[in-house]
Length: 67
Image (cartoon, rainbow, N blue to C red):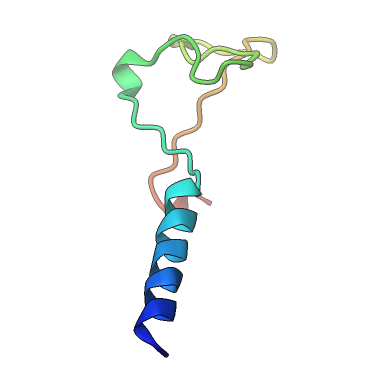
């Protein structure tokens, strides 16, 4: 492969990587904001109680064994 083609491919890979989107939440469970997404219907601040209509939307996964 010639050097010009190598540079073009490298730039393409960098551009694709820069454009890739991912979501990573790094919130402290002890101080969650009320919502984390703009169109979120429920709440992140669930308190200590829950019921079928609480609108609580928290899930904590420690590792694959949680499943």
